[in-house]
Amino acid sequence: MELRIENLSKTYPNGVRALDNVSLTIPCGMYGLLGPNGAGKSTLMRTIATLQEPDSGQIHLGTLDVLREKEELRKRLGYLPQDFGVYPRVSAQDMLDHLALLKGVTNRKERGELVDSLLVRTNLHQVRKKALSGFSGGMRQRFGIAQALIGSPQLLIVDEPTAGLDPGERNRFYNLLAEIGENVIVILSTHIVQDVMELCTNMAIIHEGRVLFAGAPDDAVGALGGKIWRKFVAKAELTDLDSRFRVISTKLIAGRPLVHVYSVEPPGDGFAPVPADLEDVFFSRIAGLQ
Image (cartoon, rainbow, N blue to C red; front, side, top):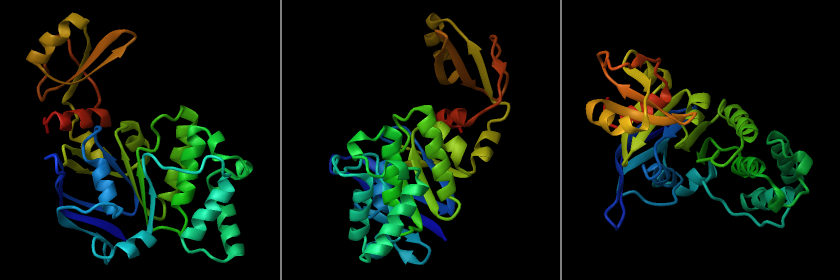
Protein backbone atom coordinates (compact mmCIF):
# COMPACT_ATOMS: atom_id res chain seq x y z
CA MET A 1 0.00 0.00 0.00
CA GLU A 2 1.31 3.45 -0.92
CA LEU A 3 -0.07 6.95 -1.39
CA ARG A 4 0.69 8.53 -4.76
CA ILE A 5 0.32 12.27 -5.27
CA GLU A 6 0.70 13.44 -8.86
CA ASN A 7 0.99 17.03 -10.14
CA LEU A 8 -1.16 18.54 -7.39
CA SER A 9 -1.71 22.31 -7.62
CA LYS A 10 -3.83 24.79 -5.67
CA THR A 11 -4.07 28.58 -5.92
CA TYR A 12 -6.29 30.49 -3.51
CA PRO A 13 -8.56 33.37 -4.62
CA ASN A 14 -6.10 35.90 -3.12
CA GLY A 15 -3.45 34.67 -5.58
CA VAL A 16 -1.38 32.60 -3.15
CA ARG A 17 -0.11 29.47 -4.89
CA ALA A 18 -0.22 27.01 -1.99
CA LEU A 19 0.67 23.90 -4.02
CA ASP A 20 2.78 24.04 -7.16
CA ASN A 21 2.78 20.78 -9.13
CA VAL A 22 3.44 18.58 -6.08
CA SER A 23 4.26 14.92 -6.75
CA LEU A 24 5.17 12.44 -4.00
CA THR A 25 5.09 8.68 -3.44
CA ILE A 26 4.55 7.86 0.24
CA PRO A 27 5.08 4.24 1.39
CA CYS A 28 3.87 2.49 4.51
CA GLY A 29 5.59 3.77 7.64
CA MET A 30 6.42 7.18 9.07
CA TYR A 31 6.77 9.89 6.42
CA GLY A 32 7.86 13.40 7.38
CA LEU A 33 6.58 16.46 5.55
CA LEU A 34 8.92 19.23 6.61
CA GLY A 35 8.57 22.93 5.84
CA PRO A 36 8.31 26.37 7.41
CA ASN A 37 4.97 27.87 8.39
CA GLY A 38 3.06 28.82 5.25
CA ALA A 39 4.94 26.34 3.06
CA GLY A 40 1.77 24.56 1.89
CA LYS A 41 1.87 21.60 4.27
CA SER A 42 -1.59 22.10 5.75
CA THR A 43 -3.10 22.70 2.31
CA LEU A 44 -1.62 19.40 1.14
CA MET A 45 -2.88 17.58 4.23
CA ARG A 46 -6.40 18.97 3.87
CA THR A 47 -6.43 18.04 0.20
CA ILE A 48 -5.36 14.46 0.90
CA ALA A 49 -8.03 14.30 3.62
CA THR A 50 -10.65 15.44 1.02
CA LEU A 51 -11.44 18.59 3.02
CA GLN A 52 -10.72 20.82 0.03
CA GLU A 53 -10.37 20.46 -3.73
CA PRO A 54 -7.15 21.03 -5.68
CA ASP A 55 -7.15 22.93 -8.95
CA SER A 56 -5.49 20.01 -10.69
CA GLY A 57 -3.70 16.72 -10.03
CA GLN A 58 -4.47 13.25 -8.74
CA ILE A 59 -4.16 11.30 -5.48
CA HIS A 60 -4.34 7.50 -5.19
CA LEU A 61 -4.26 5.32 -2.07
CA GLY A 62 -3.42 1.94 -3.52
CA THR A 63 -6.05 1.51 -6.25
CA LEU A 64 -8.42 4.06 -4.68
CA ASP A 65 -8.90 7.35 -6.55
CA VAL A 66 -9.01 9.68 -3.55
CA LEU A 67 -10.47 12.75 -5.26
CA ARG A 68 -13.27 10.79 -6.94
CA GLU A 69 -14.04 8.35 -4.11
CA LYS A 70 -14.00 10.69 -1.13
CA GLU A 71 -16.37 8.70 1.08
CA GLU A 72 -14.34 5.54 0.60
CA LEU A 73 -11.14 7.40 1.45
CA ARG A 74 -12.71 8.76 4.65
CA LYS A 75 -13.45 5.22 5.78
CA ARG A 76 -9.72 4.45 5.55
CA LEU A 77 -8.46 7.75 6.98
CA GLY A 78 -7.44 8.88 10.45
CA TYR A 79 -6.83 12.62 10.78
CA LEU A 80 -5.37 14.69 13.62
CA PRO A 81 -5.44 18.34 12.49
CA GLN A 82 -3.33 21.04 14.10
CA ASP A 83 -6.38 22.28 16.00
CA PHE A 84 -9.26 19.97 16.79
CA GLY A 85 -12.34 20.70 18.86
CA VAL A 86 -13.91 18.57 21.59
CA TYR A 87 -16.62 19.04 24.19
CA PRO A 88 -14.49 20.11 27.19
CA ARG A 89 -16.81 18.79 29.92
CA VAL A 90 -17.13 15.32 28.37
CA SER A 91 -14.85 12.51 29.55
CA ALA A 92 -12.33 10.89 27.20
CA GLN A 93 -14.23 7.61 27.37
CA ASP A 94 -17.61 9.14 26.55
CA MET A 95 -16.19 11.27 23.75
CA LEU A 96 -14.49 8.29 22.09
CA ASP A 97 -17.70 6.27 22.46
CA HIS A 98 -19.64 9.05 20.72
CA LEU A 99 -17.08 9.36 17.91
CA ALA A 100 -17.03 5.58 17.39
CA LEU A 101 -20.82 5.63 17.07
CA LEU A 102 -20.56 8.37 14.44
CA LYS A 103 -18.00 6.21 12.60
CA GLY A 104 -20.59 3.44 12.35
CA VAL A 105 -19.67 1.20 15.29
CA THR A 106 -23.28 0.64 16.40
CA ASN A 107 -22.87 -2.49 18.54
CA ARG A 108 -22.51 -1.29 22.16
CA LYS A 109 -20.27 -4.15 23.31
CA GLU A 110 -18.03 -3.88 20.27
CA ARG A 111 -17.83 -0.11 20.73
CA GLY A 112 -16.92 -0.47 24.41
CA GLU A 113 -14.13 -2.90 23.61
CA LEU A 114 -12.82 -0.60 20.88
CA VAL A 115 -12.83 2.45 23.16
CA ASP A 116 -11.06 0.54 25.96
CA SER A 117 -8.38 -0.72 23.57
CA LEU A 118 -7.74 2.79 22.20
CA LEU A 119 -7.48 4.27 25.69
CA VAL A 120 -4.99 1.59 26.70
CA ARG A 121 -2.97 2.02 23.50
CA THR A 122 -2.67 5.77 24.01
CA ASN A 123 -1.96 5.42 27.76
CA LEU A 124 -5.14 7.25 28.74
CA HIS A 125 -7.10 4.42 30.36
CA GLN A 126 -6.37 5.59 33.90
CA VAL A 127 -7.84 9.02 33.11
CA ARG A 128 -10.72 7.79 30.96
CA LYS A 129 -13.32 9.36 33.29
CA LYS A 130 -11.57 12.73 33.39
CA ALA A 131 -13.08 15.68 31.49
CA LEU A 132 -11.08 16.62 28.42
CA SER A 133 -10.77 20.18 29.73
CA GLY A 134 -8.44 18.84 32.43
CA PHE A 135 -6.04 17.15 30.00
CA SER A 136 -2.48 18.37 29.54
CA GLY A 137 -1.24 19.20 26.05
CA GLY A 138 0.34 15.76 25.64
CA MET A 139 -2.75 13.95 26.91
CA ARG A 140 -4.90 15.97 24.53
CA GLN A 141 -2.69 15.02 21.57
CA ARG A 142 -2.78 11.34 22.57
CA PHE A 143 -6.56 11.60 22.74
CA GLY A 144 -6.43 13.09 19.24
CA ILE A 145 -4.54 10.02 18.03
CA ALA A 146 -7.06 7.74 19.77
CA GLN A 147 -9.97 9.34 17.90
CA ALA A 148 -7.99 9.22 14.64
CA LEU A 149 -7.44 5.45 15.04
CA ILE A 150 -11.17 4.63 15.21
CA GLY A 151 -11.89 2.34 12.29
CA SER A 152 -8.31 1.01 11.93
CA PRO A 153 -7.27 3.48 9.21
CA GLN A 154 -4.81 2.63 6.44
CA LEU A 155 -3.72 6.27 6.26
CA LEU A 156 -3.09 8.53 9.26
CA ILE A 157 -2.44 12.26 8.83
CA VAL A 158 -0.94 14.15 11.77
CA ASP A 159 -0.53 17.93 11.37
CA GLU A 160 1.96 19.75 13.66
CA PRO A 161 1.37 17.33 16.56
CA THR A 162 4.17 18.23 19.00
CA ALA A 163 4.05 22.04 19.00
CA GLY A 164 3.76 23.20 22.60
CA LEU A 165 4.51 19.81 24.20
CA ASP A 166 7.15 19.48 26.91
CA PRO A 167 10.04 17.02 26.30
CA GLY A 168 8.43 14.16 28.26
CA GLU A 169 5.10 14.50 26.46
CA ARG A 170 6.88 14.78 23.11
CA ASN A 171 8.78 11.54 23.74
CA ARG A 172 5.59 9.68 24.67
CA PHE A 173 3.97 10.99 21.51
CA TYR A 174 6.99 9.95 19.42
CA ASN A 175 6.79 6.40 20.78
CA LEU A 176 3.08 6.16 20.05
CA LEU A 177 3.47 7.40 16.47
CA ALA A 178 6.40 5.06 15.83
CA GLU A 179 4.32 2.09 16.99
CA ILE A 180 1.40 3.07 14.77
CA GLY A 181 3.69 3.61 11.79
CA GLU A 182 4.74 -0.03 11.74
CA ASN A 183 1.50 -1.01 10.00
CA VAL A 184 -0.02 2.02 8.26
CA ILE A 185 0.96 5.10 6.26
CA VAL A 186 1.56 7.93 8.73
CA ILE A 187 2.16 11.41 7.32
CA LEU A 188 3.72 13.71 9.90
CA SER A 189 3.45 17.35 8.82
CA THR A 190 5.72 19.61 10.86
CA HIS A 191 8.14 22.53 10.86
CA ILE A 192 10.14 20.90 13.68
CA VAL A 193 13.23 19.20 12.23
CA GLN A 194 13.72 17.03 15.32
CA ASP A 195 10.34 15.36 14.76
CA VAL A 196 11.44 14.11 11.35
CA MET A 197 14.96 13.20 12.49
CA GLU A 198 13.70 10.98 15.30
CA LEU A 199 10.69 9.36 13.63
CA CYS A 200 10.79 9.19 9.86
CA THR A 201 12.57 6.88 7.42
CA ASN A 202 11.31 8.91 4.44
CA MET A 203 10.58 12.59 4.09
CA ALA A 204 9.93 15.55 1.83
CA ILE A 205 10.83 19.22 2.22
CA ILE A 206 8.20 21.63 0.92
CA HIS A 207 8.55 25.40 0.55
CA GLU A 208 6.29 27.93 -1.15
CA GLY A 209 4.15 25.05 -2.40
CA ARG A 210 6.99 23.20 -4.14
CA VAL A 211 8.79 19.97 -3.23
CA LEU A 212 12.48 20.74 -2.75
CA PHE A 213 13.53 17.24 -1.69
CA ALA A 214 11.95 13.80 -1.38
CA GLY A 215 13.77 10.74 -0.08
CA ALA A 216 15.51 9.31 2.97
CA PRO A 217 16.80 11.79 5.60
CA ASP A 218 20.18 10.01 5.64
CA ASP A 219 20.55 10.55 1.87
CA ALA A 220 19.79 14.25 2.24
CA VAL A 221 22.31 14.62 5.07
CA GLY A 222 24.92 12.59 3.17
CA ALA A 223 24.69 14.91 0.17
CA LEU A 224 25.92 17.77 2.39
CA GLY A 225 29.00 15.92 3.63
CA GLY A 226 32.03 18.22 3.72
CA LYS A 227 30.00 21.29 2.75
CA ILE A 228 28.93 22.67 6.15
CA TRP A 229 31.20 24.93 8.19
CA ARG A 230 30.61 26.78 11.43
CA LYS A 231 32.06 29.53 13.57
CA PHE A 232 31.18 31.56 16.65
CA VAL A 233 31.09 35.26 15.77
CA ALA A 234 30.30 38.61 17.32
CA LYS A 235 26.83 39.99 16.64
CA ALA A 236 28.37 42.96 14.87
CA GLU A 237 29.91 40.63 12.28
CA LEU A 238 26.65 39.08 11.09
CA THR A 239 25.83 41.57 8.34
CA ASP A 240 29.33 41.32 6.88
CA LEU A 241 29.25 37.51 6.95
CA ASP A 242 25.92 37.47 5.12
CA SER A 243 27.48 39.46 2.31
CA ARG A 244 30.58 37.24 2.01
CA PHE A 245 29.32 33.70 2.66
CA ARG A 246 26.34 31.48 2.00
CA VAL A 247 24.99 31.64 5.54
CA ILE A 248 22.28 29.00 6.05
CA SER A 249 21.57 29.41 9.77
CA THR A 250 22.44 31.48 12.80
CA LYS A 251 21.52 30.63 16.38
CA LEU A 252 22.54 32.00 19.74
CA ILE A 253 24.51 29.67 22.01
CA ALA A 254 25.04 31.15 25.47
CA GLY A 255 24.47 34.59 23.97
CA ARG A 256 26.96 34.15 21.09
CA PRO A 257 25.88 33.68 17.46
CA LEU A 258 26.89 30.33 15.96
CA VAL A 259 26.90 30.62 12.18
CA HIS A 260 26.62 27.70 9.72
CA VAL A 261 27.68 28.36 6.14
CA TYR A 262 27.44 26.24 3.00
CA SER A 263 30.61 25.96 0.94
CA VAL A 264 32.03 23.26 -1.34
CA GLU A 265 35.56 24.54 -0.64
CA PRO A 266 36.95 25.53 2.79
CA PRO A 267 35.68 29.09 3.34
CA GLY A 268 38.63 30.12 5.53
CA ASP A 269 38.19 33.03 7.95
CA GLY A 270 38.22 30.70 10.95
CA PHE A 271 35.33 28.47 9.87
CA ALA A 272 35.69 24.81 10.91
CA PRO A 273 34.08 21.79 9.23
CA VAL A 274 31.12 20.19 11.02
CA PRO A 275 29.11 17.04 10.22
CA ALA A 276 25.88 17.99 8.47
CA ASP A 277 22.52 17.24 10.05
CA LEU A 278 18.91 17.45 8.90
CA GLU A 279 18.63 21.04 10.10
CA ASP A 280 21.44 21.98 7.70
CA VAL A 281 19.60 20.14 4.92
CA PHE A 282 16.42 22.04 5.70
CA PHE A 283 17.99 25.50 5.72
CA SER A 284 20.22 24.91 2.68
CA ARG A 285 17.27 23.62 0.63
CA ILE A 286 15.09 26.54 1.67
CA ALA A 287 17.93 28.90 0.68
CA GLY A 288 18.16 27.21 -2.76
CA LEU A 289 21.76 26.07 -2.30
CA GLN A 290 21.17 22.47 -3.47
